[in-house]
Image (cartoon, rainbow, N blue to C red; front, side):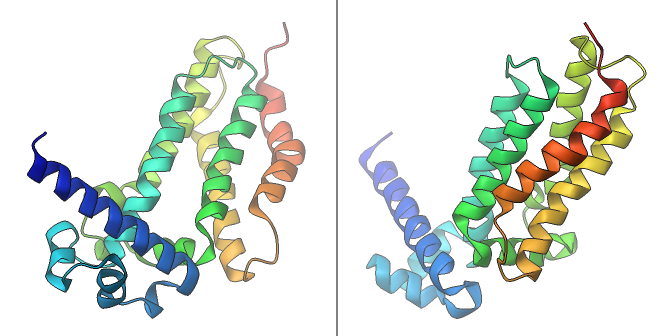
Length: 202
């Protein structure tokens, strides 16, 4: 990587960091491109070298941590499916909570209507998360922890709607509860009951 490429990378990181900070604090609707570039000390045109619109910052800051979570759990050596799913859900909701309700609302506002999203990585977020969970359940079947007749596709859709439902309820309630706490209660009460008929007893 030459000096020009390094400088471009640093500028991108700087815009992303400052944009994230402003959006978390004020909400996307109250942040302009000028606010971001002024705080970063760069010209307005520089912003459009790296992003098509300010909404792209929301997608980019949300994309990386969830990709890392999915990768980590697909390769996890944890064999207790209840523990594995609890850790997955807990990490997932931790990232939602860490970035704050303003970022969550902006992300949901667009991805709930995929035609509004210009980047195919974000239009496929639902499918990506669903496939990640399905892979975890299928691995548990292959590993012998879940029975061979486990309806992994049906369970995936039941469970993923709970996970997404928590995000939506968090936004609709104006953050009256902690997503991580709801995740723990869901896993201890509902998830255990959902999986119980399919757990292989060793």
